Amino acid sequence: AGQGSPVPGMSIGRDQEIVPMLTYHSVGMQHESWIWKHLSERADVFAKLLERLARAGYRTVTLDQLYAHMAGDERCPPKSIVLVFDDGYLDNWTTVAPLLKQYGMRGTVYVNPDFVDPGSGLRPQRRPGPEGGEAVDHVGFMNWDELRSVDESGVLDVQSHSLTHTWHFTDPEIVTCYSRGNAARYPWIAWNARPDRKPFYLSEDQSAFIEAGTPVFKHEKSLIARRFLPDETASLKLMSAYPDFCSNFPADSEGWIQDYRRFVSRVIGAGTFPGRHETEEEHEARVQAELSESKRIIEEKLDKSVNYLCWPGGGTDALCKRLAGEVGYRSWTLPSREQVSKRNRPRTNPAEIKRLPAMRDSYFFGRNWGAGSERLTLLDIYSHQESFIHNILRKIYKVAVAAGVAGQR
Image (cartoon, rainbow, N blue to C red; front, side, top):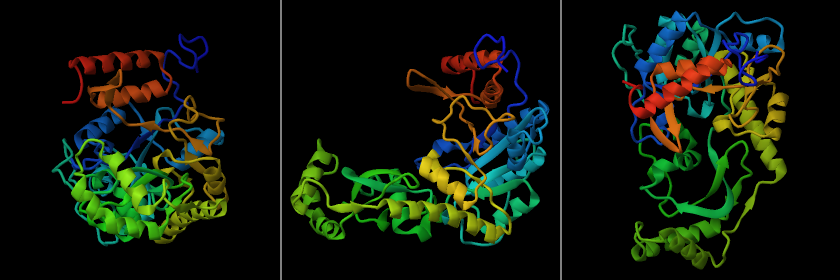
């Protein structure tokens, strides 16, 4: 591909040796207060995309087939695509699985055992139909019975998304202080305090799990975070004095965070919050446990082999990749920032798979001008297959979205 083409790396038509991995999270979940609500695709738009893919002759392949294709062992058929879904949301059972069956397709769901619903039994699914049937607005995560059902049927292959999919403090620098007003922005703080309630965070108020006034320190995704552990004595002292701070400094006052930081320094008697960082040995052991436990639990619960890993939030580094290989994963996804030009084609490293996010927003000059229809996703797929013509059409379509003459209905 690309030889003699107008743009280096591009060709006039699509390169059918490139197998796009189209990435979703939730489909059909309506949750306006969810901090990551942009990760939920409309069910009707998703159904229309599947219909268009089927009409265009695309067929879904498994991660095993993609691995063999990239390794050069066995080629995937032309117009192959991989559909993946991160996190294991309940709508992957209620909505995604029925739609995939309706259009004769299959995919992969990457799950975190910490978020699997502890309940049992199969909950109602969306009925098939021209518009996807009646809407089922289920909020939450799949349970093991549902995961076993989609895996055994072949409609969704269950693989690993690590164990916790959380964030950890990394530095004594205070970002803000926890309160009921900003709890929705930091749901992971409640997750870390009460991991047993993680599967229910979308449907219950968990702000009371953490005391108001608790410092929120600088943080990072769990696998790449070198954890900062705040001193417990200093934390208790701060909590005891916090009511006095609230009575003198309303939360919406100008310069409130600076006042809070000065208050913390005064209470603890130091300019930097006391605590310690994980040692290198502790960090490596924690990451190794995250990766191995997720693999072990899924394999035991579903009686299958788990060979593929998706990094939560794209948070990975050289240590994580080394440990993933040692634990027994044969392949993992690439974060969007890494190897931007890589494509999933024969004779490329199958241990690292490039993903294509299913995002339909049209951004120009740092502003979101609106959402395109499923046509934009289809053009993204064609452009990802290094088609110069479709790349131009994609840009024209995004301008049309921004001008208000095309887009989501």
